Amino acid sequence: MSLRLYRSQMARRSAIFILPVLALTLWWVLRLPAGHTAKPGQAAPEFSSGPWINSEPLAITDLRGKVVLVEFWTYG
Image (cartoon, rainbow, N blue to C red; front, top):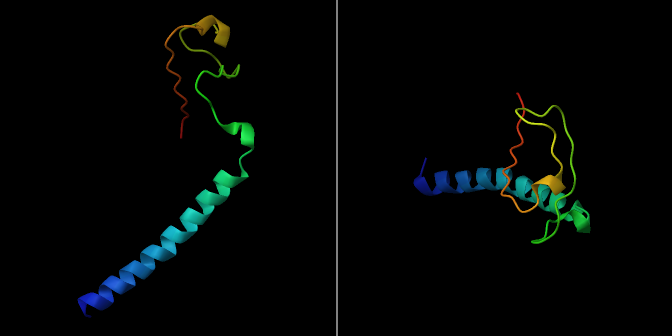
């Protein structure tokens, strides 16, 4: 098999994989409602979830003016 033929086959296989991924990403971005983007200076929405670890449940208003790291994770 020549190198030129091999490269064209690889390019075709790459396109077969990449084009659907790009199309799916574009579809996902375009279907988001207009208000789904966070803007600098905008207040964070209030949230609640399962059990809190190592603290009492906090509210967003309790954290105002503080640096906060929020890590979302799951078992799996």
